[in-house]
Length: 495
Image (tube, rainbow, N blue to C red; front, side):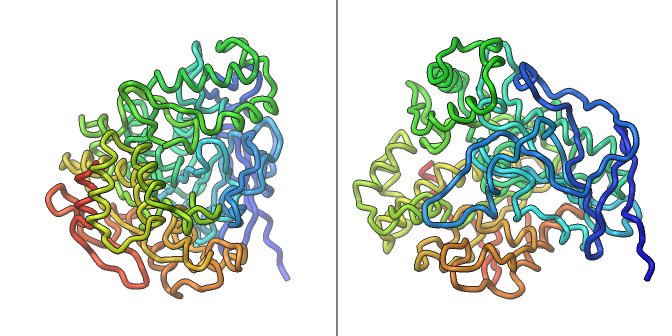
């Protein structure tokens, strides 16, 4: 029996050896930027030094410093991973490519979620062999998180985690042909915080030309903090650490203390005289921009990039059901959710009650939270992008309901991810405490969702009618798929 040696690819920094696996090849833990250490944790990403010989790329590497994340009774380790895998050289990519890649294959670059403080390429949901199997070169990446990635520190560039993603895109442009990919056909896609980052990059002129298509899964084009809000977080972080809020003082703090301080900022009130908290208190970290990404896109930035954007039907359930707050929600909780989300809460509640007359307080609370976090910002970004005819806009709503927690989890935040990556059979997703619960999704749903994402990456069209600002056509993805026009018109108008 002949054993073929594992493949070696030469990048601009040096050669890497990958690992063959079931018709695809994985190259793991390839640096795209220098290790962020000391004061460099708060500076723009720098090129990684070249290496001699062949670097092993067959095992996962370290990830960004972070605390372990839990969400009540649901096992979210397939999503968040197992926490911090320590090591300084963590600004890396994983690449999956067909075993015999040929050339000029579409490239998809994924940005993970995790509230800007957690997640990594080590998470089981981001294993990319299904993309390689179907003729796509998939790239996943780590980026700086928490204080190192997103705290707005005087003397340091803002949004350093976003700058890391742009640096990874530059690495892709320079190196992806060696893995069989077409540097002129790159789709940048992300979920949750990663999707908000994708929207931020779409609105970043310096990233122009690095990607041709974008997919925003449960992100927000209205999710950035103002500089005033960012400064409030910085002051609180400095107080928690007992330092002055300056680059030189933060540079002296070890990663362990930065992680602890980031965790201590939960629940910080970021409402100001002119702005509400776009993350309604769920995370003290986001992009910091005085112009929201949706507004920059409305002005024409990113107009030449095709966009696929959508949310899940019951986004907010993830923040209520696993911690026992869905079934116990009251009308007062609905009012409180509206007050945290909107300058006219009574009018917002009235609009949601009119749109959902049979909804329980838990369902109304979840809907308001979900749209505050993701829906309103996605509608704004879709409408801003669709106003420019140079590229296409497509919208979706993922509606398949998990049976977890007696059906309370439903079509919640993150539920589409296993289908996008064609990993619905992952054992960690099935069971009483798992994301899918005791039930099984439709047998062909992952195949169909995964194929639509790849079709969009390959052709710029996922397989349904484009979104425009008259019809707002949206594909509702469930056991059966259906195009609907402006499915949330009442709620959308309330925002």
